[in-house]
Image 1: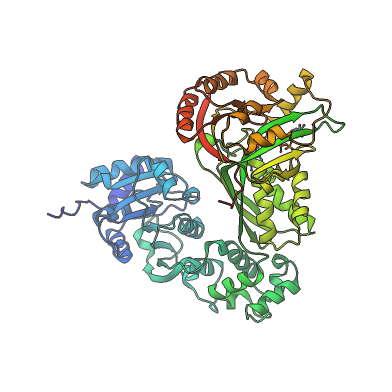
Image 2: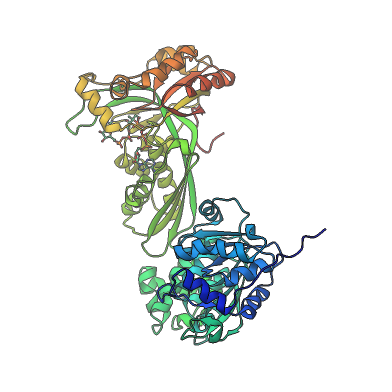
Length: 597
Ligand SMILES: C[C@@](CO)(OP(=O)(O)O)[C@H](O)COP(=O)(O)OP(=O)(O)OC[C@H]1O[C@@H](n2ccc(N)nc2=O)[C@H](O)[C@@H]1O
Ligand SMILES: Nc1ncnc2c1ncn2[C@@H]1O[C@H](COP(=O)(O)OP(=O)(O)O)[C@@H](O)[C@H]1O
């Protein structure tokens, strides 16, 4: 049997005033507060939205709850985002007394401009609902356009919207090219789908009565373009309308890197150079963005590493240490996607595979090694450009496993392709060495010998794959501090050998890991342990559990246990996970060259 519709008492004008008085609320201009006090109007809005019962609706700016109650009456589930703490607190109470299905409402006290997605909405609401499918709102008038565009972008699951806004804004949102009201909001909303006017609303349905007219806009999402094209398209739209009276050739000159480039892009997009932004529809802007873009989207990968051998000599006059390092690339792979952009804006999104591998939350865009790598590659070719980076991390942060260096290496490769840079592999190696000692290895992967500062890398060819268990530590360890402790101990070698002995080569080739286990060594071990004596216990746990060998990776604090086979690795992982200070264990194999099976 179908459940009966919820019973709801909509708010009357008297109820609105009572509620406001009880809350000591005087509608404020800054938050654009005008409350609808007419039942007919809120029912009309809900009817115009045309939604099936049970739809999860996002409402922004519910105020005292007039529209919220009408949505609940129509059997919707409502997430209401309210910025005013008094109103946000009062709304659930109002709904409890006026609706027999108050569980269909959840209120989120937040600025709608800060909502980043359906997951974020759930997190803030403290409950897990399916994503909202529709936005129905009497939008705060002073921020209606950014809220509407921002939510449509942030929550791709929103299929439709029915919003009440100031009438002039409604006309702008729905205007087409050539019309007097056509502008930035019209072109940007058209990127996402179709908008049309859905009726005017008189001033008398509000309390207090506003000084502006209102209208409804109905929006239907129709995705037609690639998300990666949005930034450039929107930049072009902003520029074209910022200088409305200029011809497009002039208006877009700065953004495109000169009037000639702008002219060439316009020509290849089939757009008259003398036309103005108001003549271009969204299809034209997208075509123009494609013609003007400074490159193409490109992706590359690089892996984290452990050092099977790390000999360290006394520092030279630069304070850097000559090394002999045997790198082993792991199947913990970082992937960097470079999206070139018009203009100069640079930003980066870093996604870490799990909480245990740490995060880069405190890192500024300019310090991000992947950003520095792309900039260095561009600079080498005398270029400057905007770009967006997407970094997918699997290597633990600050664990002595060169995750940042892998990001830089992948970014160099991806940037070369994205911007079609005239750089040879040798050029990339040179740029890599300036970015950090481990970056050159990141370009190569697999098994490799690192000489010089570890940045002169020679690949050693294929070798049997080993299984390692990595004990990831709760806290990172700073590489310079470990080198400083090493110097203070006076343990530095006079010089490092520049090759591997035949015994080493045999051990590396032997599928049985025993011989290798006897050779693995790291000169930084004592320095790392002097800073972090707690790591000893983790090493002991590996040895006690029968690891072929247990060692510190690079400058630490990751402790590595070499396993005989997969089953042995699982047992080692259990033993290491129980050791103090271990945040997580990861089973990894190597040597691995990213992109090769
Ligand atoms: C120790 C090793 C072993 O592979 O790796 P991690 O454990 O850090 O991953 C590397 O040598 C680290 O390489 P990487 O982390 O890229 O070093 P860089 O960014 O160039 O330098 C960081 C700091 O390490 C010191 N450093 C690095 C390399 C080297 N040959 N001598 C040094 O003295 C310097 O104090 C420098 O300021
Ligand atoms: N893309 C990046 N990934 C990781 N760390 C980065 C990155 N860019 C800059 N860093 C900085 O470098 C430090 C160590 O880098 P990382 O390569 O993760 O460890 P390690 O040098 O110990 O191998 C981090 O703590 C961080 O401050």
